[in-house]
Image (cartoon, rainbow, N blue to C red; front, side, top):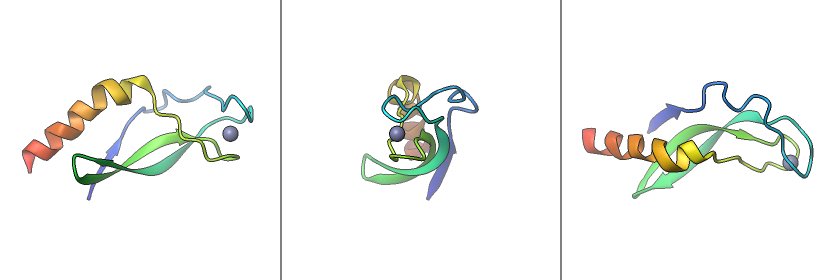
Length: 71
Ligand SMILES: [Zn+2]
């Protein structure tokens, strides 16, 4: 299983809007194009909401596709 680390520190300062808690890095399993990836994403320790930043949605998925191509 591939593991990626994204958002190095760029989530610091983000807060969960409903809870007002600082987001903490959390290992999240994403499924994409039939493969699973462990990605560290900022998540709210209170309600568990995961913040998926635009850069992940827009750019990092291209990296995931690249990983798939390398196999
Ligand atoms: Zn929350």
